[in-house]
Length: 388
Image (tube, rainbow, N blue to C red; front, side, top):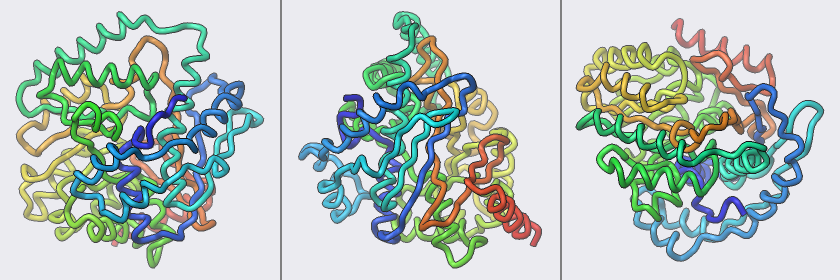
C-alpha cells in the first residue's frame, strides 16, 4: 500500500478543504490527469493504480494525527472533526487505459474530491518507477543529496528551503529518507515540508496555503468571472484572518494579478508565490508593485515554486537577498533526483458545478482548460480588466 496515512498529502489540500467546507460545501468538482512526459505510456499500469486507489478507502485519521492537527492554529475544531470522519470514496475516481494515454478523472463533492490529487499523483509515480526495468543506484542519489546540502550550507543565513515534492516523488520511503537526511545535514536551511505526515513525524513545520484549483473554482462561485480572483482572495482572508497569507499570482497571469492586488490586499497578505514565468522578471515587478503601493517589500515574503532546483534557488537568493524575505519550495529536485527521469504529471480541476474552469499562466504549456473557447473568453475578460 503506497499511501499509508491520511496525512500523506500536502498542507494546501487541507487548507483549501477547510475553506470549501465552510464556504462552498455543496460545490461539485471534476479533475483530470495529464501526463506531459513524451513517450511514456502509463496505460499498462491502470490495474495496479486502480488497486492502490481502492486501498485509500481504508485510511483513517489516527488519534495522534488528530491531536497534532489540533495544535496547528489555522484548523478549526469542526474541520478536524470532519476530517476524523472522512473516508476516501474510490467510486469518485476512474482509472482506465485510454486510446493514447492513461486516463484518470475524479468527480464528486469538492470538499471530498479535493483530497485525491496528491495521493493519486504519488501512486502513479511510485507504480511507474516500480515497473521500470532500471532501478536507481541509491549511493549516487545520496551523493546528490549531500551535494545539495553542501550548497545550502554555503548560502549562509537567510537561505531556506521548503520541501514540496510529494506529488512527484520517486517513492514514499525515498521521500522520507531524503527529507530526513536534509533535516539532519542542514537543519538551518530546511524551513519545513508541504507533506503533513512527514511534518508531524519528523517534527518539521508544515508549509502551504492555496493552489490554482481554488482560484479557478471561483470563476463559477464569484458574482462574475472577472471578479473571480478578488473574490477568492477575499474569501481566503475571511477564512484564515491573516494566517496562511501567501497569494498565488499566476492563475490569470501576473498582469491580471497586479491589477487586482491593490493596497488593501497587498497589506493583508504576508506575501506571494511564483509558479510560472521568469522568476527574475516576476520578482522585479513584485518589488516595484509593493513600492508603488507604499509598502516596504522587505516586510513581505516572496516564495518560488516553479520546478526549482537548489542551484536555481541559490541564484535567485543571490540576486534578491535583502530586498524582500525569500522562500523556496523545491519538489522534484529533492524527492526524485535518483538517476531515473522523473515524470511530469499533474491533476487539474476542469469543472465546478458542471461549468468549465481554466487556468491561464505566465508560461506556455501550463495553461489548462477543457474548453478552448472558454479559455479564450477568460483570457479576453482579464485582458480587458488589465486595460482599464
